[in-house]
Length: 265
Image (tube, rainbow, N blue to C red):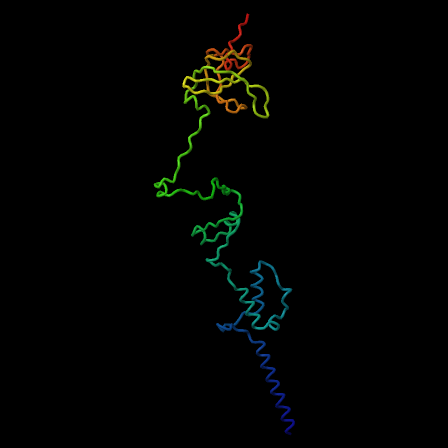
């Protein structure tokens, strides 16, 4: 009798355990914090499918969802379906295009007049001009250094005709005439004359043009202007002035050589 009683008692306990397990599986899950009953899986999936704008996910879920999904999975699915859209007022998105920025501008950025700095070249924005000055430092003298006399004046320009003393021309007497050779790469013979000016200085002057009629004791007029290929010759005699006559048979630039206009019949 004892063995039969023990067997019947074990069967009763096993039946009670099965009923308890079936009851827990069929019981509706509750929220862990608010303890409110969670909606069934079918309503959750239908709401989720409506929010996804017609994208059905029936192929992902079998017909009996409550038997396969645990309460933890249902809770996670519910939080996903009921999660609000992420719109943080502190998050600002800096775009690289002004058009996209204007379309994605949030109310808080428009209220705060938020204007990002675009690093890339955009259409409609003027290009940054390049610097038109040098960035190297300029060494300047201090006031005390200027007071001590650190600054020096600019050197005076040396005149090309120092014997004329700032006058356009002077009268002189020819001492002698001669010929000198030009420096390289030129070659030839340059006619020159030693002249004593009315100021008492003796200079070497160049005789321009072809041929001349001056000799010793001839009175000439001297102007400034050097001969480029004759070293030391810084003055020129004026053709057609005083004893020095003009160049004959000269047709061009006659005024420079003292030639009169030829008469025509």
